[in-house]
Length: 408
View (cartoon, rainbow, N blue to C red):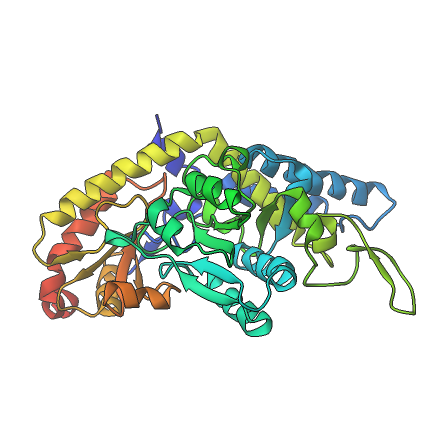
């Protein structure tokens, strides 16, 4: 069980923050999440009491920073059930996916090889592969989506050919919110010698993830979507695959030695990917965020969010002016208010203190599937309440009288 009232006390943004003179109702958690005091304190503690560099000093302060920095790798490994050597610190999901595309794809894909995506992918799981295709001559193909954007194992099987080398898909997509059958996809793909890359930006913060059980090859996620700081994230990779990968950045700390003749000996994974001074305070904040959400319980978080989603969907179905695109999904809710441009509707919600997302949500080719150019999106987290959803529904009811509601 989740004590939402107690949890909300942990978040400064939920205690006094307003928009347009109204108490903030934050329903854009798919974009980023609010930060609990524990995370804020952990970052401030580093900046106030440590603030040294990692892996670069032979003095006590630096050793203390090393310890804190590497301890987070243990926290992440425990969180997703992997070895600490399989945890690469990155700047977020986008950086992680780029690292796989350019560090693995660029060296393992050749002309005529195929990479499978879906039309529901975020730009960060699409554009890097486009670039790799331009350089290598590999071919981008798309797995057919079923109703409401569902990915099925049958459609994955139909899309696979003898030339398929990589499948790169979101476990939960950021607009239509469907949970892909990742374990079954991995099992089938591995029988064919295919590598599976998973965008976990919208799944890792919201449900238990066990990379061993799922048998993932790569997993990307961000700290800022699980109550951590921005600008930091993780790439998990099976160690043997990380060792095969080439770094995409070079410089300090990632090399063991180099000579003037250009011969370079890189360190082993994960260090060879972590060039330069890291976002140390971000890493420490990420560790605090993971500990915080683990203290609540990932299964508890998942179940509570599903209850919120069902409640919202049932309320929205009662409204004639709402067009729902994914009522049966598990993640964000994509919808429109009939006859109202999505960004105008978002501005209306804003006047009532409600933060929602409007537009294409960094998934521009999804419009080819939905046959709509833009949508509204609401996305919940464990600190949201039924009362906030009621307030959201009240504004939805006013949406078809948009001009009166906005200017009246």
